[in-house]
Image (cartoon, rainbow, N blue to C red):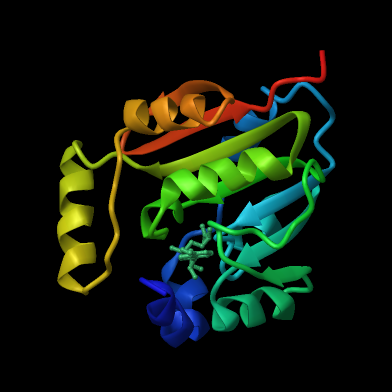
Length: 189
Ligand SMILES: C[S@@+](CC[C@H](N)C(=O)[O-])C[C@H]1O[C@@H](n2cnc3c(N)ncnc32)[C@H](O)[C@@H]1O
C-alpha cells in the first residue's frame, strides 16, 4: 500500500494543511483535449481538493478510505481503487487528473497506462507534480523521505517521455517547481 496508510491517518487534517486548488492550472491542461471535457476522473484525488475546484463533473478515485470519506463529506462521488488498476471501464471519461499524487504511486507507468485505457479518444490526461531538480523540489524530496513517505519524483521530461511511451500525445506545459504534463489520447481516425 506504499504511502496510502499515511493518508488514511492524516485524512482528517489534510485539507487544513493544503491551499485550495487553482482551477486555472487544470483548465490549461483541459484546453488540450480534442473533445468536450464533461466527465473527469481525479486519480489519487484524496479529499477532493481538486475535484471541488472544477466546474466539470468529477469522480474522486483514491486508494485511501479516509481521504475518500473526506471527499464524500464535500458531496463528491468517490471510487476506492488503485491507480495502477482502476476499477473503471475502458474509454469512459473525458479527462484524467493526477495532482500531487503521481510521486506517491508505487508504479506510475501502470497509472499512466490505466489513465490512457479509461480515456475516451481525444480525452486528456493532466498531471501536476513537483520537479525534484529545483531548489524547492530538493527540499520537498528530503522532507517526504524524512517523514517516511516512499515517494519517487520524476522531472517533467521523464514524465512526458513515459506518457508518450503509453501512446498519448505528450507535452510539458509548465516547468517550475510545480509542473504540468498533459497527454492526449489519440482519436478514432
Ligand atoms: C498528496 S495526496 C493528493 C490528493 C489530491 N490529489 C490533492 O491534490 O489534494 C496523494 C493521494 O494519492 C493517494 N494515493 C497514493 N497511492 C495511491 C494509489 N496507489 N492508488 C490510488 N491513490 C493513491 C493517497 O491516498 C492520497 O490521497
